[in-house]
Amino acid sequence: MDFWTEDKKIGIKISKYIIQNLFSKCRKSKDIETGGILLGYYCMNYTCAIIEEITDSPEDSKKGRAYFIRGVKGLQKIIDKFWKNNKIYYLGEWHYHPADSRRLSGTDINQIKAITDSNQYNCPEPICIIVSKKNNSEYNIDCYLYSNKTSVVKLL
Image (cartoon, rainbow, N blue to C red; front, top):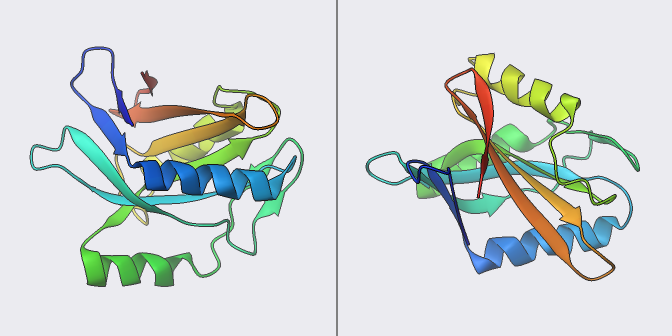
């Protein structure tokens, strides 16, 4: 699946395997929000991010029916392993809205801004993927990019 800005200048590519993995993690979570990080790389001209891996939510995450605060326990080890073995790195966050909300919440936007401003992440334009429950067996995927430290852009 590909998602692009309206002007087709910036995109995200997600394989069928990653999408199935996202849906599986959401099904297991049932009606509780969950999430993790996105790992991958950019194509040569940096116009498209390719998502290669997603993580489960770390065990120190806080979760509920209408909130998710991603923890950090064990993530650095995972990031280091993927960098060493595959040269892929942190691209952003994903999480699940079981109540069929396809939009970023205020908390989601604040998290993206904090990632952008943090030297720890080294990610000036983080991606955020929201998986939302459409009905009992189907899900929506919406992709967002925090662009130029000024705005959240939805990719179509």
